[in-house]
Image (tube, rainbow, N blue to C red):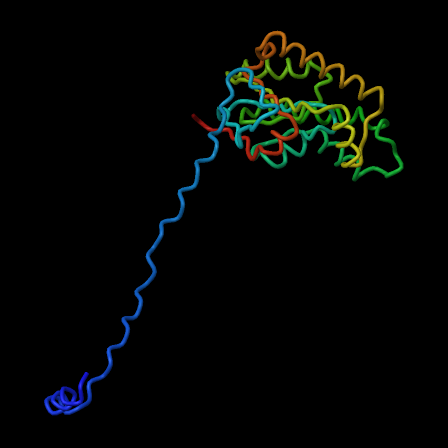
Length: 235
């Protein structure tokens, strides 16, 4: 700007002209958060579902009054799964054993009071069945008659039994026993392994749940770790 022009403006306005200030930046543009991918839908078991060697569901949904039996080798993770995923009544023989162990001398071998543990376990199981609500049951799998008894009792009440099978190798199951500080004898473990093998062969041969079971879900260790909840609710 020339001196004469500045003098004219000064004469008109009575003060020197202020330099233009840069415009303050506005608030940053709001960027919508990325849309999260929908999680996997819960599985409503209706037949045989083999979820090994793949990504399993995070939830299993069952009808509100049905029974779910969680079976597998000792040390396969049945009690862990029940504690972490189930919010209804759970009948677990391991809980009964721990209750007896707390009341009895530590030097007393489990084999001595094992019959009492089993008797108390089946008494609780029968009482829970008669109550009629949703129920989850820990099953060692070595005594198939227990599952048949549960299925018949449920059917008489208009309910159905569903099986969740934890398919762990014998080495994985042994490691699980060591981790919890309780191991079964070699004889008993071999009996459990034979029963589990027979059940796996039956499932592979028929491609359908065993008699009395409305559905079977087979989980390996990875699929069991990914499971977050077992829900009893209306569809």
